Length: 360
Ligand code: NAD
Ligand code: ZN
Image 1 (cartoon, rainbow, N blue to C red):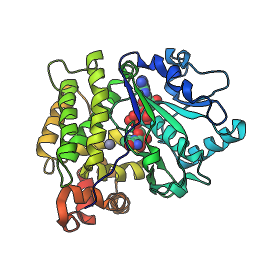
Image 2: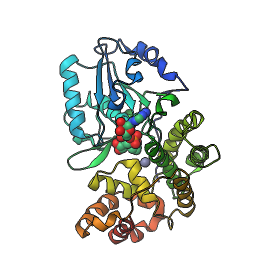
Image 3: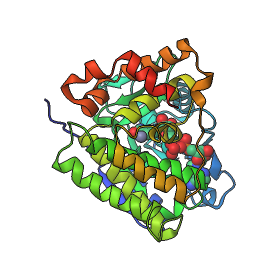
Image 4: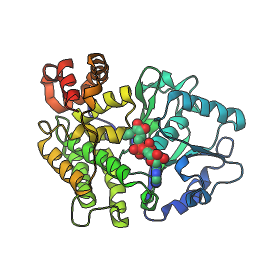
């Protein structure tokens, strides 16, 4: 087994109001390349107070990007890259402000500004040829761990797969818990549960180790405070915690691996376009035989926050659709291996995976 050698974020600012330090953080880099920054911002913030607090200069390019209903695509990144380069040449850096989708757009854009051709050429591990440019992430949702991960997930014509390499990782993140206060309750729950599921899956498999367990335990502890205990709920104190949980959950899975829920989630998302965190919740409720304690606790949290998840989805899926979904999931062997050990091929057959999808 090869031991992971993970590139972490270079610098992290954390705390309420830390977003106000954005300009001073990027100032020393303004002399790089063509001396301007590109902002990619979740369209949700257009016209909201945050759009007046960007601290951008007149030379900067500001893009508000609609991430609904589709997750970032290769075509979207290629187009944006071409437009930016033809307008003003190579920027000093990319600043992404938004949820997991915008984090991925900022990371992918930073890489594609220096790597020629379509981003479809680079979907996979270590296919990127040159370092990208400086990129800074300001997450406005907490849970996916996209702020810390070494991948920028893109949906292409053939595959939904990340641009994954050391250069993908942000140079800087600014974690300001005030920015997640406006996340709608259901989305707060789904994204938070993504972190919870990262930890449960990271823990329950052959690749866990003292390092992944330490981060995962702490993230789980924070998730319980945010979603389960007496003071659970969407409060400023809990937002402070959830933001840290997301980061630590991401680090836990990075040094271990995700498992069955994520393997299925990719199948559900690729074929039906279901968003990552929501897809995980739809699936996780049905995995009690695989993650008994995790699913029990998850169900308590569902009950406490009166979250209603869709049921009986598989009624609409014929054999062909199930095969398509199962094929996507089957082709993530490292997740099945982590969850089921060396005999995973005997357990996680196409038929078994289809049966798991039939539970939904
Ligand atoms: P998202 O970024 O797609 O945003 C979900 C919704 O929340 C959007 O409507 C958005 O406009 C809105 N929103 C964002 N911030 C808000 C705020 N502060 N207040 C109100 N609304 C807000 O959702 P997400 O769940 O954060 O991210 C999912 C994406 O992350 C998917 O594209 C998935 O592929 C990706 N992802 C990436 C990684 C990774 O490691 N790179 C891991 C998991 C998921
Ligand atoms: Zn996830």
